[in-house]
Image (cartoon, rainbow, N blue to C red; front, side, top):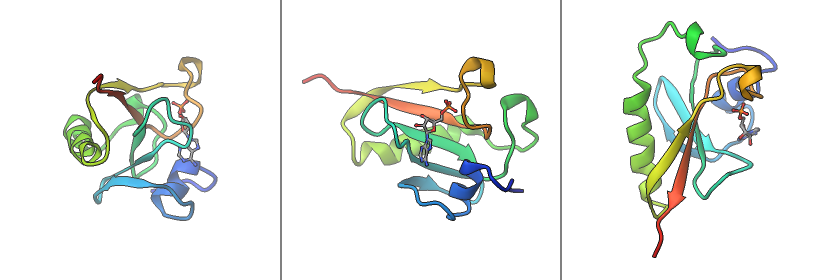
Length: 109
Ligand code: AMP
């Protein structure tokens, strides 16, 4: 289910362009337009819900994160990454469609 006027639903529907990192029937991962580091990616469920407590699907986000990271390794030089969820407006969530930030930490040479 998608919600009109939800930016991330529009991205999931391909009504708005994004740079896709990983996609399957359940989730989409795409580059953040305002990245905190190279390869900063957002992972979303394709169906709309705002926050963790609203989750009713069986998506294993940890497994999805591993798949996204595997894809990112093809293009970016990192091992470590930060994983962030701003869950709710008072926690800094600006887009009210659940998303996981995957933020690579560039390898030191
Ligand atoms: P949050 O504050 O956790 O809701 O994060 C929202 C994130 O969405 C921010 O890091 C933004 O840079 C990112 N963002 C906003 N618009 C877009 C867009 N059109 N494509 C990709 N990322 C976006």
